[in-house]
Image 1 (cartoon, rainbow, N blue to C red):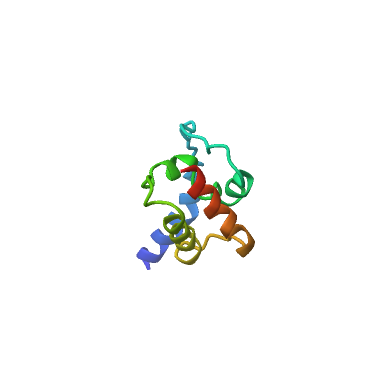
Image 2: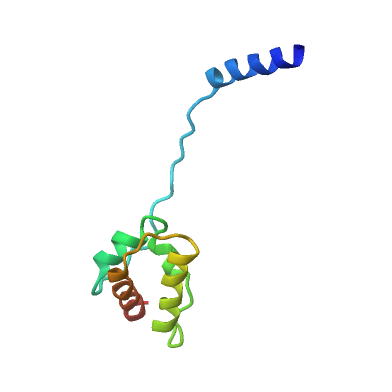
Length: 99
């Protein structure tokens, strides 16, 4: 019985002592490069990550359309990104042309 009393007391008093947690995020250090369909990328991609994330992806001639198509597909299928079918090609085209 004492164990249940202690648990009930802890549950009743615990939330009263809890304080909100506040975080200060660092400033953005990168911005999306200008290009066609930039607005589509900003509307879809920035919900989960910043331009910094895209800049860390492999770059170069072999990391173009096929690479970005696979990345966007992964964001949708693995991570559940709510990207509409009509936007997928626009995002891939922007990333392949710009990065």
